Length: 415
Image 1 (cartoon, one colour):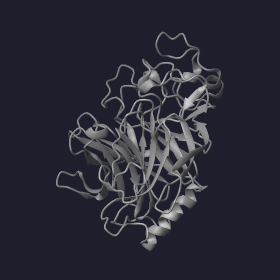
Image 2 (image 1 turned 135 degrees about the vertical axis):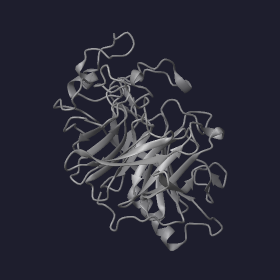
Image 3 (image 1 turned 180 degrees about the horizontal axis):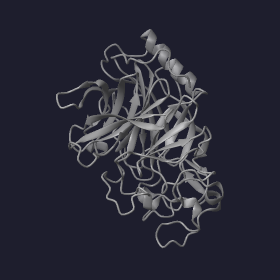
Image 4 (image 1 turned 90 degrees about the vertical axis):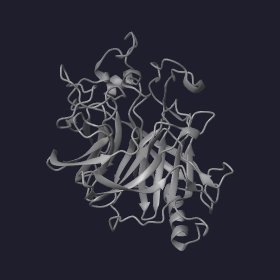
């Protein structure tokens, strides 16, 4: 069953009232699919700079690239989805041989009425800079990788194709614009990165006004004002495809503690506006995982704590409206889903329970399927995270039905 047919079956049963057990109230699991953690594609040897063999995985991965976890999802025109792989192995210093892929996925959800619960990767395309447009030196231009003793030559495929790696960018979000091109939110700059439909860079990386992270290649002797790996974790796109709303994961020096900036970027003019919103993190110490637009003013935000498994306490999806501010000028938020307490009347993940938990360190994708259904996925931080245990986490994709209808554009944006 294709992704499109699988989801269509869920939506038909949901609309008819046949899918949800009448005794269940609140968010309910209506679809489940999983991609094994140890999923690889052919490519340059990766994992050469991992300091140990985590979770029993022996690195390097010779002539292979892990599919990785997913930092963002988009609907694709064939009824499937595009999945943005994580940037590598967790840090700039160990990811110079990890390619930055966008994978085409077909999801066969297990539902009350059937489905296998499987995920198929149908193609994998790396980001590249064939025309030298990104504006700063990349790994592909070097003779040797910049890690460790610097005695490992850069793979010929990376050099010849000017393929981007996890030492060049840390893209954690992406959107397709009205022209069919793609925009990526990066954490190292933080930058906005523009590519064509083939994921080739088509313009210089766009810096964030007044914000620089420690890995920013243009920092020089300047001082960063954003913590490491706290750039554009989430980025939303307006329904018409002409406006981006990048959201920082960390607090900029001088901003109120525990608040995150949401910015506004006009694609036509290639410029940020003066508009800015502050999103409050609560409780302290949590982080955001994704940021998705519903309509002209409303958005979804994933929040997650730093814990996993039984220790996880805060994994939630919130609704915000840019016109709804508190007395301090900060956005108000409404909880939609507690990802640690989802009804599972049909035991779709086959764990023997009637309550489903999504207890991962990083949950980084939320995508509305219809007014009552959300597609949510984790980033398994391959090969590190153990949220389910005892072995490494798989990549899980869940469909969650919510009672409160979302106000989506009618019709939905074309894909």
